[in-house]
Amino acid sequence: MCSFVFKQSNTFKVPIRFKNRIEVFIILWSLFVAGCAQVVRPTGGQTDREAPAILKVSPENKSLYFNSKTIAIQFDEYFIVKDPSKQWLISPPFKKVPEYKIKGKNLIIQIEDTLKENTTYNFNFGKSIADVNEGNIIPPWSYVFSTGNFIDSLQVQGLVRNALSNQNEKEITIMLYKEARCTNDSFAYKIPPDYFALSDDQGKYQINFIKEGKYRAIALKDLNNNYLFDNFEEAIGFSDSTIDLKSNIELDFKIFKEVESKSYVKGKSNPSYGHFNIILNKALPNIEIKALHPIKNNAWSIISKSKTNDTLNIWLQDFTPDSIRLALLSQGKGIDTIAFAVLPKEKFISKTKRVIPQKTILKITPAQGNDKDFNIPVTLQSNNPVLKTQKDSIYLFEGKNKINFTLQQSDSVGLVFEVNTHWNSDSTYNLQVFPGAFKDCFSYTNDTLSTNFKVPLTETVGNIFIHIKPDSAQKPIDFIKTHLLLQLTNEKGQAIHSQSITNYGVFSYLNYKPGKYFATIIVDSNNNNNWDTGNLIKGKQAEKIIFKDGSLNLRANWDLEEDWLLAPKDINP
Image (cartoon, rainbow, N blue to C red; front, side, top):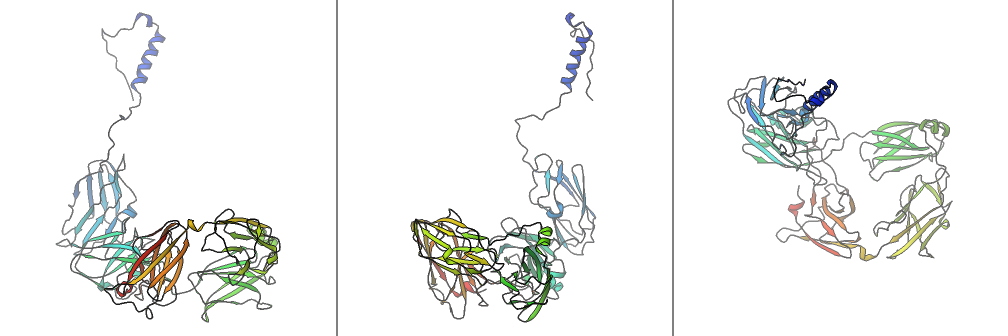
């Protein structure tokens, strides 16, 4: 409450002209309001950039014979604690998360767990403590104590990278397990680690205060923060052998997502009338579908697989059953069964609240007004499998001249068709598709469609030549015994070209758009023309990928030539 005390004084007299009581009241009220004005923080001062400083810790940091249930940390200013469940890292991990409370400038931590004997604990606070006003975070700090008579001092540090992209991986949990506890290869599924740390934004990690001994090591993208590998969405990496820790070491990891050994249906949907899809948990190139419902003939459906072999698309041709029941088989063995309701059109519309398009919907690549990529064909893609084409209802013009072309189906069920001709650079083309050109599996036909596109000048693109050479200081590679795949990838890490390497020589990539590209070599150990992931239980690492140093920066109207020395030591795991 704000108040004024007026004392009698000869120096303060109410002037004669303010003798009126109302006027005097107004003056006094104005003085009162001015005195109660809000106090504003002075402006123009320096911003506080200092984080809270630790004045005292009880028990003291690096205490021996620790048996306290409470840790008290005193700071020099008021502070806040942010997201302790994620920021506080306690190694070895506690079974019960510590409770905490703030009392003034003190942080009081209550240990709920039973501490192990003769064990060094490392309590890292991460970025959880900051001052109240400016949010300045205290620098990395650990509280360390031992329940025995000495502090363990060994250290393991290193780098975590993605096996497929070679990118550094942050927030990966690196875990050490005493070998004596790892009685079988499934230890990462069942027991928590003895020590752990998180990788930082650069993929670097450091585990401190480790006891001498033998350990197994795992790197895990621990999505549910339970220190267990219990989800195949969690990327994992591991050390091939036991670590005999007698001194500080560096240990790097390559992490990957495992593929489940079991195959099953992960999801299903009915995206449009008569169209069903089945999503599998992994790629199955040899998948088969067997109808369990009564069918009139084997042409009850049209079935296609996605390029990744993990999705099946079914277009129904027999609508007489009210449901379809299917069995999925791989190499003659049953995987799963699944059923779909076959709704009448009216019920499908009312239930899904979608309109059934009574036509074949086509998509042309390149789109209207775009340039044609020299390495990508002109395509017509349908929403449903096309059973019949009428080529004379399709016209291709170069400028104003009608030109000849071929129409070629490029998939197994008629979803994609290529338009091929001799494409001239610096020329404009018009593709016209008239009604009836395509008739799909539901007897729908297309509407009129027209698009204009341009084939650019060859001077606007460039060429890449990668010369893979033997290292003169090493033995040459035996390409008969070693299967290698050379891949060119774009900035997004997408493979845009892949080919086998059968010998040393020059590999050409012609007429590519200017940009940044990368070259990689996959050591295809199982000779299946794909990169394969690893498996923890089997002790199998992901197939090795050799990344060419630096990027391939291609400019327009330019031939980029790069040498790449390759020797047996480069391809060995």
